[in-house]
Length: 351
Image (cartoon, rainbow, N blue to C red; front, side):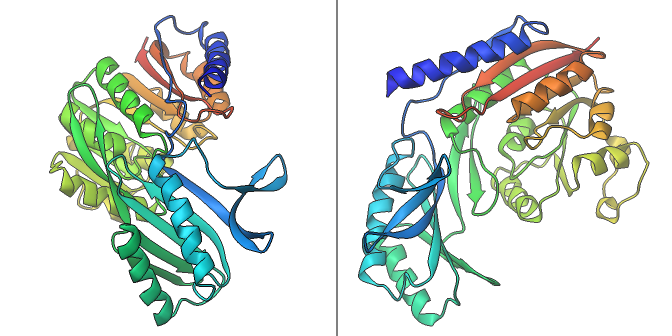
């Protein structure tokens, strides 16, 4: 497995270098563990030879999955244990069609069970027993139902070069699937960013970078468009006593419109935007990259920290940002081994 991994990482590195060499020579590379690195996964549930099993689509073909070595050891253990429970109690497993596993490196776990039927009191009783027997939280979902037995999050402990902090990763909110690489990302940002004045963070999620920024910068203004993620962010800011962070539920484009006084938002009525002294903007957009308005407004900042899970869109954005900024440092983070996806980071300095 290590040989196969090293080969695919070498191909990603070559592709990264080919695209980035025209912009930057200061590059860093962060390889992943070859197995047991992934802490979140979802499967379909199907009948295979009369017995329930986990399913995934591979090259357009439905296949059965009995173990997945890319996943954390706790996930592989829970996969077997849950399947036994579902087989033994067919009323509990009736019309189940998907299972999601999420764990943390300290072995906390949530199992999400998704159904095409109403979840009644008998289901809750069984789920409570399952929660106790497997020592994990259970979340049941069906149409207009979301029932949590235990917590609806796992707590991950992230660490950068000089900081360590807990973060609650909530069920149905985006979180990094490869926490070891996430630590590398946090360390690289801490090592290479300016660390002065205030920072604007777009697409902040539940606060993976926000908590680190609260320790690095005077003030942080963090925005996110997802309601569940903003709720999770609030909890994580309280958990980490991050008192210098102001958060708001806004898209990236809406945030920049508010800062430039193009639009007013009732959600910001108690936020004094003029008091911020931004020198840095942090961008971590969806795979499609930045919209034209965000790209244009970002180019006005002295420093840009750009984390991307969509390498093609990043290269396109980089061509435009190169008109106003130089790339001070770049990094390849192998967040998604054995796939073509490339997670990258860039720190740009105004010309």
